[in-house]
Length: 417
Ligand code: DWN
Image (cartoon, rainbow, N blue to C red):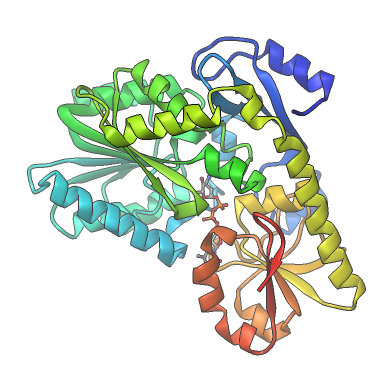
Protein backbone atom coordinates (compact mmCIF):
# COMPACT_ATOMS: atom_id res chain seq x y z
CA UNK A 1 0.00 0.00 0.00
CA UNK A 2 1.18 3.53 -0.48
CA UNK A 3 2.45 4.23 3.03
CA UNK A 4 2.11 7.99 2.78
CA UNK A 5 0.04 9.09 5.81
CA UNK A 6 -1.03 12.27 3.99
CA UNK A 7 -2.48 10.20 1.15
CA UNK A 8 -4.20 7.97 3.70
CA UNK A 9 -5.70 11.07 5.28
CA UNK A 10 -6.99 12.44 1.99
CA UNK A 11 -8.45 9.05 1.09
CA UNK A 12 -10.22 8.72 4.41
CA UNK A 13 -11.95 12.08 3.87
CA UNK A 14 -12.94 11.33 0.26
CA UNK A 15 -16.33 9.89 -0.78
CA UNK A 16 -16.55 7.03 -3.27
CA UNK A 17 -17.62 8.10 -6.78
CA UNK A 18 -20.00 5.15 -7.06
CA UNK A 19 -21.49 4.40 -3.65
CA UNK A 20 -20.79 7.70 -1.88
CA UNK A 21 -19.31 6.04 1.21
CA UNK A 22 -16.28 7.72 2.81
CA UNK A 23 -13.27 5.89 4.20
CA UNK A 24 -11.44 5.18 0.95
CA UNK A 25 -8.12 3.34 1.33
CA UNK A 26 -4.82 4.42 -0.31
CA UNK A 27 -3.34 2.40 -3.19
CA UNK A 28 -0.78 4.54 -5.06
CA UNK A 29 0.19 8.20 -5.48
CA UNK A 30 1.62 9.05 -8.93
CA UNK A 31 2.27 12.64 -7.93
CA UNK A 32 1.15 15.88 -9.56
CA UNK A 33 1.07 15.25 -13.31
CA UNK A 34 -0.03 17.30 -16.34
CA UNK A 35 -3.20 16.29 -18.22
CA UNK A 36 -2.21 13.33 -20.40
CA UNK A 37 -3.97 14.48 -23.58
CA UNK A 38 -3.23 18.19 -23.18
CA UNK A 39 -0.61 18.27 -25.94
CA UNK A 40 1.20 21.61 -26.10
CA UNK A 41 1.57 23.98 -29.02
CA UNK A 42 4.91 25.74 -29.54
CA UNK A 43 3.45 28.92 -28.05
CA UNK A 44 2.35 27.07 -24.91
CA UNK A 45 5.93 25.95 -24.25
CA UNK A 46 6.58 29.43 -22.91
CA UNK A 47 4.00 28.99 -20.16
CA UNK A 48 3.73 26.57 -17.20
CA UNK A 49 1.05 23.92 -17.69
CA UNK A 50 -1.47 22.91 -15.01
CA UNK A 51 -0.72 19.82 -12.99
CA UNK A 52 -3.15 17.88 -10.82
CA UNK A 53 -2.73 15.22 -8.10
CA UNK A 54 -3.00 11.65 -9.40
CA UNK A 55 -3.84 9.61 -6.29
CA UNK A 56 -5.51 6.20 -6.52
CA UNK A 57 -7.75 4.80 -3.77
CA UNK A 58 -9.94 1.78 -3.12
CA UNK A 59 -13.55 1.94 -1.89
CA UNK A 60 -14.17 -1.01 0.43
CA UNK A 61 -17.94 -0.51 0.27
CA UNK A 62 -18.28 -1.20 -3.46
CA UNK A 63 -14.81 -2.51 -4.46
CA UNK A 64 -14.21 0.36 -6.90
CA UNK A 65 -10.67 1.62 -7.60
CA UNK A 66 -10.69 5.32 -8.42
CA UNK A 67 -8.67 8.54 -8.40
CA UNK A 68 -9.42 11.26 -5.88
CA UNK A 69 -9.11 14.27 -8.18
CA UNK A 70 -11.90 15.25 -10.58
CA UNK A 71 -10.62 17.53 -13.32
CA UNK A 72 -13.59 19.38 -14.90
CA UNK A 73 -14.67 17.44 -18.04
CA UNK A 74 -14.81 20.64 -20.06
CA UNK A 75 -11.10 21.03 -19.32
CA UNK A 76 -10.27 17.43 -20.24
CA UNK A 77 -12.38 17.15 -23.40
CA UNK A 78 -12.01 20.61 -24.85
CA UNK A 79 -11.78 21.79 -28.44
CA UNK A 80 -8.16 20.64 -28.60
CA UNK A 81 -8.88 17.07 -27.40
CA UNK A 82 -6.67 15.14 -29.82
CA UNK A 83 -7.82 11.52 -29.49
CA UNK A 84 -9.22 10.00 -32.71
CA UNK A 85 -9.97 6.26 -32.66
CA UNK A 86 -9.55 5.77 -36.41
CA UNK A 87 -5.75 6.02 -36.32
CA UNK A 88 -5.57 2.40 -35.21
CA UNK A 89 -6.36 -0.47 -37.58
CA UNK A 90 -6.64 -2.70 -34.50
CA UNK A 91 -9.40 -0.54 -33.04
CA UNK A 92 -11.19 -0.24 -36.40
CA UNK A 93 -11.23 -4.04 -36.79
CA UNK A 94 -12.31 -4.51 -33.17
CA UNK A 95 -15.16 -2.02 -33.57
CA UNK A 96 -16.34 -3.52 -36.85
CA UNK A 97 -16.48 -7.03 -35.38
CA UNK A 98 -18.45 -5.71 -32.39
CA UNK A 99 -20.95 -3.95 -34.66
CA UNK A 100 -21.43 -6.92 -37.02
CA UNK A 101 -21.99 -9.25 -34.07
CA UNK A 102 -24.62 -6.93 -32.62
CA UNK A 103 -26.40 -6.54 -35.97
CA UNK A 104 -26.66 -10.32 -36.20
CA UNK A 105 -27.47 -11.06 -32.56
CA UNK A 106 -30.06 -8.28 -32.18
CA UNK A 107 -31.44 -8.57 -35.73
CA UNK A 108 -30.95 -4.82 -36.24
CA UNK A 109 -32.39 -3.14 -39.31
CA UNK A 110 -33.92 0.03 -40.68
CA UNK A 111 -36.40 0.18 -37.81
CA UNK A 112 -33.73 -0.04 -35.12
CA UNK A 113 -31.73 2.66 -33.34
CA UNK A 114 -28.14 2.34 -32.16
CA UNK A 115 -26.82 5.09 -29.89
CA UNK A 116 -23.11 5.32 -29.11
CA UNK A 117 -21.84 7.36 -26.17
CA UNK A 118 -18.35 8.79 -26.75
CA UNK A 119 -18.74 7.98 -30.43
CA UNK A 120 -15.48 9.83 -31.22
CA UNK A 121 -14.92 10.11 -35.00
CA UNK A 122 -17.55 7.57 -36.00
CA UNK A 123 -15.06 4.69 -36.08
CA UNK A 124 -17.74 2.26 -34.83
CA UNK A 125 -21.08 3.71 -35.95
CA UNK A 126 -19.92 3.74 -39.57
CA UNK A 127 -20.50 -0.04 -39.79
CA UNK A 128 -24.16 0.38 -38.79
CA UNK A 129 -24.62 3.33 -41.17
CA UNK A 130 -23.19 1.27 -44.05
CA UNK A 131 -26.03 -1.21 -43.45
CA UNK A 132 -28.81 1.34 -43.28
CA UNK A 133 -29.26 1.06 -39.51
CA UNK A 134 -30.19 4.39 -37.87
CA UNK A 135 -27.60 5.68 -35.42
CA UNK A 136 -26.97 8.58 -33.09
CA UNK A 137 -23.48 9.40 -31.88
CA UNK A 138 -22.87 11.52 -28.78
CA UNK A 139 -19.41 12.94 -28.06
CA UNK A 140 -18.33 16.11 -26.24
CA UNK A 141 -15.07 16.66 -28.11
CA UNK A 142 -15.69 19.02 -31.04
CA UNK A 143 -12.83 17.66 -33.17
CA UNK A 144 -13.79 13.96 -33.30
CA UNK A 145 -17.54 14.77 -33.23
CA UNK A 146 -17.07 17.10 -36.19
CA UNK A 147 -15.15 14.41 -38.08
CA UNK A 148 -18.01 11.94 -37.50
CA UNK A 149 -20.65 14.42 -38.70
CA UNK A 150 -18.53 15.20 -41.78
CA UNK A 151 -18.52 11.44 -42.50
CA UNK A 152 -22.34 11.45 -42.51
CA UNK A 153 -22.84 10.00 -39.04
CA UNK A 154 -25.61 11.72 -37.05
CA UNK A 155 -23.76 13.11 -34.03
CA UNK A 156 -24.53 15.40 -31.08
CA UNK A 157 -21.50 17.21 -29.66
CA UNK A 158 -22.44 16.98 -25.99
CA UNK A 159 -21.74 15.18 -22.74
CA UNK A 160 -24.18 12.33 -22.16
CA UNK A 161 -26.12 13.04 -18.93
CA UNK A 162 -29.44 12.23 -17.30
CA UNK A 163 -30.80 15.52 -18.69
CA UNK A 164 -29.67 14.78 -22.23
CA UNK A 165 -31.19 11.29 -21.99
CA UNK A 166 -34.46 12.81 -20.83
CA UNK A 167 -34.40 15.29 -23.73
CA UNK A 168 -33.65 12.52 -26.26
CA UNK A 169 -36.56 10.41 -24.97
CA UNK A 170 -38.82 13.46 -25.19
CA UNK A 171 -37.69 13.84 -28.82
CA UNK A 172 -38.77 10.26 -29.46
CA UNK A 173 -35.42 8.47 -29.28
CA UNK A 174 -35.49 5.00 -27.65
CA UNK A 175 -32.49 2.78 -28.33
CA UNK A 176 -32.34 -0.92 -29.15
CA UNK A 177 -28.61 -0.79 -28.46
CA UNK A 178 -26.59 1.72 -26.45
CA UNK A 179 -22.83 1.35 -26.88
CA UNK A 180 -20.26 2.95 -24.61
CA UNK A 181 -16.62 1.99 -25.18
CA UNK A 182 -13.91 3.52 -22.99
CA UNK A 183 -16.22 6.16 -21.62
CA UNK A 184 -17.70 4.90 -18.31
CA UNK A 185 -14.34 5.36 -16.57
CA UNK A 186 -14.22 8.97 -17.80
CA UNK A 187 -17.52 10.15 -16.38
CA UNK A 188 -17.65 12.18 -13.16
CA UNK A 189 -21.39 11.55 -12.69
CA UNK A 190 -21.29 7.77 -13.17
CA UNK A 191 -24.75 7.31 -11.65
CA UNK A 192 -26.36 9.92 -13.87
CA UNK A 193 -24.67 8.39 -16.91
CA UNK A 194 -26.06 4.93 -16.11
CA UNK A 195 -29.52 6.32 -15.27
CA UNK A 196 -29.44 8.00 -18.68
CA UNK A 197 -28.63 4.70 -20.37
CA UNK A 198 -31.51 2.98 -18.55
CA UNK A 199 -33.94 5.71 -19.65
CA UNK A 200 -32.78 5.69 -23.25
CA UNK A 201 -32.90 1.90 -23.65
CA UNK A 202 -36.00 0.12 -24.90
CA UNK A 203 -37.36 -2.36 -22.37
CA UNK A 204 -35.71 -5.21 -24.30
CA UNK A 205 -32.69 -3.14 -25.32
CA UNK A 206 -29.05 -3.91 -24.52
CA UNK A 207 -26.24 -1.70 -23.29
CA UNK A 208 -22.80 -2.83 -24.51
CA UNK A 209 -20.02 -1.20 -22.50
CA UNK A 210 -16.25 -1.71 -22.74
CA UNK A 211 -13.89 -0.67 -19.96
CA UNK A 212 -10.22 -1.34 -19.19
CA UNK A 213 -10.13 -4.28 -16.73
CA UNK A 214 -8.48 -3.42 -13.42
CA UNK A 215 -7.28 -7.03 -13.03
CA UNK A 216 -5.10 -6.68 -16.15
CA UNK A 217 -3.92 -3.27 -14.94
CA UNK A 218 -2.71 -4.78 -11.66
CA UNK A 219 -1.43 -8.12 -12.97
CA UNK A 220 0.45 -6.53 -15.92
CA UNK A 221 1.48 -3.44 -14.00
CA UNK A 222 -0.19 -1.15 -16.54
CA UNK A 223 0.19 1.84 -14.22
CA UNK A 224 0.59 4.22 -17.17
CA UNK A 225 -3.10 3.74 -17.99
CA UNK A 226 -3.79 5.75 -14.84
CA UNK A 227 -4.42 9.39 -15.78
CA UNK A 228 -6.94 12.12 -14.99
CA UNK A 229 -9.37 11.14 -17.81
CA UNK A 230 -9.76 7.73 -16.13
CA UNK A 231 -11.64 8.41 -12.91
CA UNK A 232 -12.50 4.74 -12.23
CA UNK A 233 -10.79 1.36 -12.75
CA UNK A 234 -13.36 -1.39 -12.92
CA UNK A 235 -13.71 -4.99 -11.81
CA UNK A 236 -16.78 -7.07 -12.65
CA UNK A 237 -17.57 -7.04 -8.93
CA UNK A 238 -17.65 -3.24 -8.77
CA UNK A 239 -19.55 -3.02 -12.06
CA UNK A 240 -22.27 -5.49 -11.05
CA UNK A 241 -22.93 -3.50 -7.87
CA UNK A 242 -22.81 -0.16 -9.71
CA UNK A 243 -25.19 -1.22 -12.50
CA UNK A 244 -27.62 -2.69 -9.98
CA UNK A 245 -27.89 0.67 -8.23
CA UNK A 246 -29.05 2.23 -11.51
CA UNK A 247 -31.69 -0.14 -12.78
CA UNK A 248 -29.43 -2.25 -14.96
CA UNK A 249 -28.64 -5.97 -14.78
CA UNK A 250 -25.24 -7.31 -15.86
CA UNK A 251 -26.38 -10.07 -18.25
CA UNK A 252 -23.10 -11.13 -19.74
CA UNK A 253 -19.40 -10.22 -19.65
CA UNK A 254 -16.34 -11.00 -21.74
CA UNK A 255 -12.63 -10.43 -21.17
CA UNK A 256 -11.06 -8.87 -24.27
CA UNK A 257 -7.39 -8.41 -25.30
CA UNK A 258 -8.00 -4.89 -26.66
CA UNK A 259 -5.99 -2.18 -24.89
CA UNK A 260 -4.14 -5.10 -23.25
CA UNK A 261 -7.08 -6.09 -21.10
CA UNK A 262 -10.68 -4.92 -21.22
CA UNK A 263 -14.10 -6.08 -20.12
CA UNK A 264 -17.13 -5.95 -22.40
CA UNK A 265 -20.40 -5.81 -20.46
CA UNK A 266 -23.86 -6.62 -21.78
CA UNK A 267 -26.57 -5.11 -19.57
CA UNK A 268 -30.31 -4.56 -19.70
CA UNK A 269 -33.30 -3.48 -17.64
CA UNK A 270 -34.38 -6.99 -16.75
CA UNK A 271 -33.09 -10.54 -16.84
CA UNK A 272 -30.53 -12.45 -14.83
CA UNK A 273 -26.72 -12.76 -14.99
CA UNK A 274 -25.54 -15.54 -17.30
CA UNK A 275 -22.89 -18.11 -16.37
CA UNK A 276 -19.88 -16.00 -17.52
CA UNK A 277 -20.89 -13.27 -15.09
CA UNK A 278 -21.21 -15.68 -12.19
CA UNK A 279 -17.91 -17.34 -13.11
CA UNK A 280 -15.97 -14.06 -13.33
CA UNK A 281 -17.43 -12.83 -10.04
CA UNK A 282 -16.33 -16.09 -8.40
CA UNK A 283 -12.83 -15.69 -9.90
CA UNK A 284 -12.57 -12.16 -8.58
CA UNK A 285 -13.78 -13.22 -5.14
CA UNK A 286 -11.14 -15.95 -5.06
CA UNK A 287 -8.48 -13.35 -5.97
CA UNK A 288 -9.74 -11.01 -3.26
CA UNK A 289 -10.50 -8.21 -5.74
CA UNK A 290 -13.28 -6.99 -3.43
CA UNK A 291 -10.67 -6.18 -0.79
CA UNK A 292 -7.93 -3.59 -0.28
CA UNK A 293 -5.25 -6.27 0.20
CA UNK A 294 -5.49 -7.17 -3.51
CA UNK A 295 -3.72 -3.87 -4.20
CA UNK A 296 -1.21 -4.20 -1.37
CA UNK A 297 2.02 -4.25 -3.38
CA UNK A 298 0.96 -2.23 -6.41
CA UNK A 299 2.61 1.03 -5.31
CA UNK A 300 5.97 -0.71 -4.80
CA UNK A 301 5.71 -2.51 -8.15
CA UNK A 302 4.91 0.74 -9.93
CA UNK A 303 7.92 2.55 -8.48
CA UNK A 304 10.18 -0.43 -9.22
CA UNK A 305 8.99 -0.71 -12.86
CA UNK A 306 9.44 3.01 -13.48
CA UNK A 307 12.94 2.96 -12.04
CA UNK A 308 13.91 -0.15 -14.05
CA UNK A 309 12.75 1.46 -17.30
CA UNK A 310 14.48 4.78 -16.56
CA UNK A 311 17.75 3.03 -15.73
CA UNK A 312 17.56 0.73 -18.79
CA UNK A 313 17.09 3.68 -21.11
CA UNK A 314 19.80 5.70 -19.35
CA UNK A 315 22.23 2.79 -19.85
CA UNK A 316 21.46 2.74 -23.58
CA UNK A 317 21.91 6.50 -23.76
CA UNK A 318 25.22 6.36 -21.84
CA UNK A 319 26.35 3.73 -24.32
CA UNK A 320 25.98 6.30 -27.11
CA UNK A 321 22.58 5.18 -28.44
CA UNK A 322 20.05 7.64 -29.88
CA UNK A 323 16.49 7.10 -28.64
CA UNK A 324 13.00 8.20 -29.66
CA UNK A 325 9.46 7.11 -28.73
CA UNK A 326 6.39 5.90 -30.64
CA UNK A 327 2.83 6.91 -29.69
CA UNK A 328 1.88 10.31 -28.25
CA UNK A 329 -0.59 8.34 -26.16
CA UNK A 330 -2.21 9.51 -22.94
CA UNK A 331 -0.58 6.52 -21.24
CA UNK A 332 2.75 7.69 -22.65
CA UNK A 333 2.38 11.01 -20.85
CA UNK A 334 1.85 9.24 -17.53
CA UNK A 335 4.77 6.88 -18.15
CA UNK A 336 7.28 9.56 -19.13
CA UNK A 337 6.28 12.10 -16.50
CA UNK A 338 5.98 9.64 -13.61
CA UNK A 339 9.21 7.81 -14.49
CA UNK A 340 11.14 11.04 -15.13
CA UNK A 341 12.06 10.15 -18.72
CA UNK A 342 12.36 13.19 -20.98
CA UNK A 343 14.60 15.10 -23.39
CA UNK A 344 17.72 13.93 -21.53
CA UNK A 345 16.96 10.47 -23.00
CA UNK A 346 14.51 10.79 -25.90
CA UNK A 347 14.91 13.06 -28.93
CA UNK A 348 11.31 13.03 -30.19
CA UNK A 349 8.01 11.11 -30.25
CA UNK A 350 6.22 9.96 -33.41
CA UNK A 351 2.49 9.45 -33.92
CA UNK A 352 0.24 8.76 -36.94
CA UNK A 353 -2.46 11.09 -35.64
CA UNK A 354 -2.01 14.26 -37.70
CA UNK A 355 -3.82 16.26 -35.00
CA UNK A 356 -0.95 15.42 -32.61
CA UNK A 357 1.95 16.05 -34.97
CA UNK A 358 3.65 19.41 -34.45
CA UNK A 359 2.60 19.54 -30.82
CA UNK A 360 4.59 18.58 -27.71
CA UNK A 361 4.06 15.89 -25.05
CA UNK A 362 2.67 17.26 -21.79
CA UNK A 363 5.21 17.82 -19.01
CA UNK A 364 8.29 16.40 -20.77
CA UNK A 365 7.62 18.63 -23.79
CA UNK A 366 9.05 16.25 -26.39
CA UNK A 367 8.21 17.19 -30.01
CA UNK A 368 5.67 14.95 -31.78
CA UNK A 369 6.52 14.08 -35.38
CA UNK A 370 5.22 11.90 -38.25
CA UNK A 371 6.37 8.24 -37.98
CA UNK A 372 8.36 8.80 -41.20
CA UNK A 373 10.90 10.51 -38.93
CA UNK A 374 12.02 7.05 -37.73
CA UNK A 375 13.38 6.18 -41.17
CA UNK A 376 14.68 9.70 -41.72
CA UNK A 377 16.66 9.76 -38.47
CA UNK A 378 16.95 6.01 -37.69
CA UNK A 379 17.30 6.22 -33.89
CA UNK A 380 18.90 3.11 -32.38
CA UNK A 381 15.95 2.49 -30.04
CA UNK A 382 12.28 3.51 -29.95
CA UNK A 383 10.33 3.38 -26.69
CA UNK A 384 6.89 1.99 -27.54
CA UNK A 385 4.51 4.20 -25.54
CA UNK A 386 1.52 2.72 -27.42
CA UNK A 387 2.42 -0.81 -26.28
CA UNK A 388 -1.21 -1.87 -26.49
CA UNK A 389 -0.79 -1.77 -30.28
CA UNK A 390 2.52 -3.63 -30.23
CA UNK A 391 1.78 -6.09 -33.05
CA UNK A 392 0.28 -3.47 -35.35
CA UNK A 393 3.11 -1.00 -34.85
CA UNK A 394 5.98 -3.51 -35.06
CA UNK A 395 4.55 -4.79 -38.35
CA UNK A 396 4.06 -1.26 -39.63
CA UNK A 397 7.65 -0.35 -38.73
CA UNK A 398 9.25 -3.43 -40.35
CA UNK A 399 11.58 -1.27 -42.48
CA UNK A 400 12.91 0.61 -39.45
CA UNK A 401 13.56 -2.73 -37.73
CA UNK A 402 15.14 -4.27 -40.82
CA UNK A 403 17.60 -1.39 -40.82
CA UNK A 404 18.60 -2.42 -37.30
CA UNK A 405 16.23 -0.31 -35.23
CA UNK A 406 14.96 -1.85 -31.99
CA UNK A 407 11.80 -1.21 -29.97
CA UNK A 408 11.74 -1.03 -26.18
CA UNK A 409 8.39 -2.34 -24.93
CA UNK A 410 7.96 -0.89 -21.41
CA UNK A 411 4.94 -2.77 -20.03
CA UNK A 412 4.67 -5.16 -18.18
CA UNK A 413 8.51 -4.97 -17.91
CA UNK A 414 11.17 -3.45 -20.22
CA UNK A 415 11.73 -5.75 -23.22
CA UNK A 416 13.88 -5.00 -26.30
CA UNK A 417 12.49 -6.50 -29.56
O1 DWN B 1 -9.57 5.79 -22.78
C1 DWN B 1 -8.87 6.24 -23.70
C2 DWN B 1 -8.09 5.34 -24.59
C3 DWN B 1 -9.01 4.28 -25.14
O2 DWN B 1 -7.55 6.08 -25.65
C4 DWN B 1 -8.82 7.69 -23.96
N1 DWN B 1 -9.17 8.37 -22.71
C5 DWN B 1 -7.50 8.20 -24.43
C6 DWN B 1 -6.80 7.22 -25.26
O3 DWN B 1 -5.71 6.74 -24.51
P1 DWN B 1 -4.31 6.58 -25.27
O4 DWN B 1 -3.99 7.87 -25.97
O5 DWN B 1 -3.30 6.00 -24.35
O6 DWN B 1 -4.81 5.53 -26.33
P2 DWN B 1 -4.13 4.79 -27.49
O7 DWN B 1 -5.18 4.58 -28.50
O8 DWN B 1 -3.44 3.61 -26.96
O9 DWN B 1 -3.02 5.78 -28.10
C7 DWN B 1 -2.28 5.25 -29.14
C8 DWN B 1 -1.56 6.40 -29.81
O10 DWN B 1 -0.70 5.84 -30.81
C9 DWN B 1 -2.54 7.32 -30.54
O11 DWN B 1 -2.09 8.66 -30.46
C10 DWN B 1 -2.46 6.85 -31.98
C11 DWN B 1 -1.04 6.36 -32.09
N2 DWN B 1 -0.84 5.29 -33.07
C12 DWN B 1 0.11 5.51 -34.06
O12 DWN B 1 0.73 6.55 -34.09
N3 DWN B 1 0.31 4.53 -34.96
C13 DWN B 1 -1.55 4.13 -32.96
C14 DWN B 1 -1.33 3.14 -33.89
C15 DWN B 1 -2.09 1.85 -33.81
C16 DWN B 1 -0.37 3.35 -34.94
O13 DWN B 1 -0.14 2.49 -35.80
